[in-house]
Length: 401
Image (cartoon, rainbow, N blue to C red; front, side, top):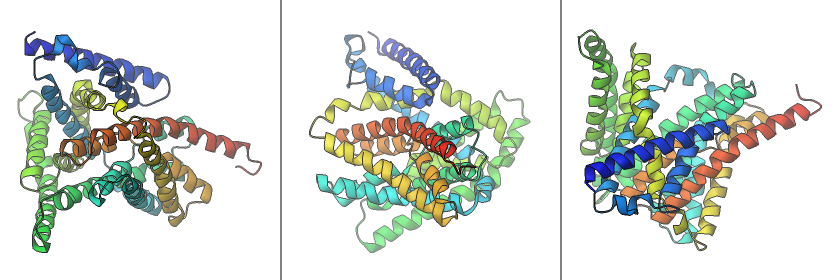
């Protein structure tokens, strides 16, 4: 079959399957990403091995889908940056900052320790920890909203901590890829890499905040169809390119910085609507399904099961301990700190992005990648269950109130 026709058919199957299983997941009280990951695993080598069906043989389908998935992740990171409200984060106070910082650093340490007994070096171990550091509170926020406690002190701390966590993970990832995963050759070489990275981060942020908002407002007044959205796409792609080529950091960092720059623009909500449509209509679902297409859960096998279980245990404990300690340092009560820690357990988009990057640059193997996908699925499933149990126990407690 003609490669173009293969691509069109595969894309139709992937987007339809992603949206269908995403809808079914939300009907079961879970985030759409869970259903999209599951259908990706089903369509991938774990079950159906779709891309190796005879109808898709002989083309470059996997490479093309990878390109689309990379575009999807860039848009996803731009939207994430666009939604960061630095003022609201500051208002959430000390619990959010402490929980966000410790909720990122403790998983990095525990993840590295969990990987070392299985023969991984310190570089790989730290990267495993980075994959455990990111959090996704969408499912926790939805659960707390249903319970009527999202606007409570712990609910606001949860939302603020998630922002701090994501920003810190992006910075840690940038540092790791620029310094540790680089080809350093001594102290001066490492210092040069760090300076280059910091210069890019500062310049990209300053230029973006000072100029993008003004340019966007001027473009909005021009008779150009969806001019602001097109401008944003050009800047996302340029920043992603510049992040790798000029800054020596991951392309997703550039997309995230572009989102942060536009977040302070008066056109933020206008742009948010357009970019959500562009991203979530097809490119972001392709990214999530493609993770399943790349992951082979059967590669874990019996020998890989101990590693997967230990990583899962580290993922659960590290957020409860790290974010719980942060809550206590921020003067939340022990019960509120426990709720905060449990609410931060769920992993999601950023963790999967980090894992995909590690697989593409050869820092992790297919077995580790599959273990991380399983970890994301399990943590996403257990978080709302644990939150509801905690609040149910509070209601049943004779001194609750």
